[in-house]
Image 1 (cartoon, rainbow, N blue to C red):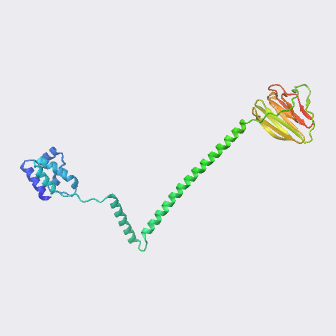
Image 2: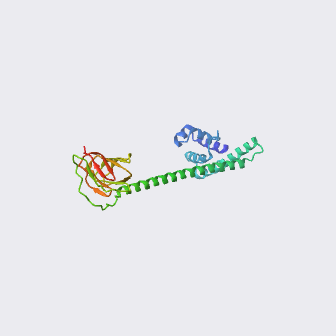
Image 3: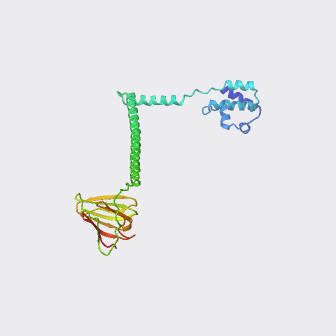
Length: 272
């Protein structure tokens, strides 16, 4: 390459051209021109050198045949190792160095064991996440099923029972005694809400119900001795006492407290 660079330099000088003039015309960097003419090729890649030589030859007026001869004698690029081969070689070299520092240890076995451990941890982590997602989905599905069942039960109303009807109980200045059928099995009370109604109910002295009974709902209770009932709207409920049906026990929006129901019947005080 030294002879080739000298020849190119000679042709340039015969034409009376400076490197700066060549650089302006060919757009080849000045340092590359110097390297081509033989000053230094250590930092110049052979891959690009051919392209620069071709441009330089054509600028100097060398024919295509002569340019081909120049390119033929230009240095060939050294075979480059593939990245995978370089990584493999570097790994092998590092392993050998580590083996020299730790004699008597089989590094390949250690690396295999480490790889198995890492893989096992990754598999366990993935399985744990999958199990957690499955469990969460199962819980959500179970909760949704419970909600659906509850909603269906709320929509489902109990069948209307056919009972002997009696005249409605009218509020009066004195308590009204009704339903005097004596029952040996205890006291039975059923309440059906025609509208939303707040109810407080005591069975044998113990409060068993104290909230709003929703429209269309039906509840029933049984006591041994006595049932005490208070309603926020007397016209919003109908009662079934010891087998007798009372469709109305008072006026609309009339609150009645301490209705007493025993085996002898029902005692309704004056509403307020």
